[in-house]
Length: 335
Image (cartoon, rainbow, N blue to C red; front, side, top):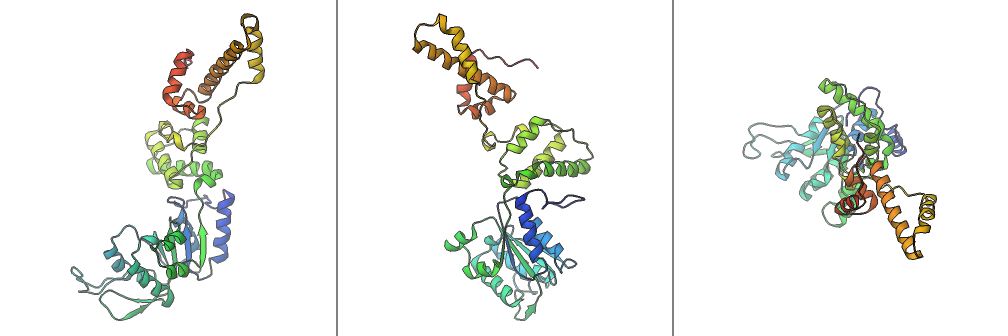
């Protein structure tokens, strides 16, 4: 997620302010940092911010996505190679560690590196030197390493997928970036930020979002985190319709309770029916029927007759809801 203008990514929720405090404490310390959290939470933003606040700010920030390259190419991408090192190596090529000399290298999805390459990474972290593929000459580098993962790394170590010694070497400082569902205070700020960003990018002025649309965005659990919100806003600006928001998965909305029928309303209904009802059993049945009908009606009105959402709030299937609407002869009001 880019940082632009007056936008302050660490100022809008208590969890991110805690991350900000850690960044300030370690920015000028030349230590290795492990950033972890779910996909899309902003791990790269944290890494770039750390670099920008450090004494290396004027030097290169080099990102390597370890999951984007096949294992056989990743080593040459990181450390470079000499001419003739392998078929197709027609000239010397400097690797990412050399390009990052004096600055920071960000190893995203570090857990996707094969075990053999992890051993070489450990050597570089320990000695700050390595050799290009096809060369026996060591190259000294001065690089700060920031690694990131969306895995439970200690568990992955226990499973044998990641070297324990490399984990401890990387985990000098550990920063967890919380998921967006733990930072819901940021929704409105991020929403306005991305609306402005994509409004400028596409030359459009987005119409103000309705209160219902904003409420839906606040209740959504955002499994894709900030990246998912960014994509939703981008589609919203491009298409110019709130139907984009209506397509968010109903199952990922924070649960809300269906409205309850006030007890005094049930009592009043029973009072009206009492002279015409024979027996307590029938009176109870009529009260239950009345309560169910009113609950259905209130819920449908509350969600603007979005029946999938109403069924979810009521805890019944969509088919059951349709049957009850028909049974109670509930009609959607004319706009």
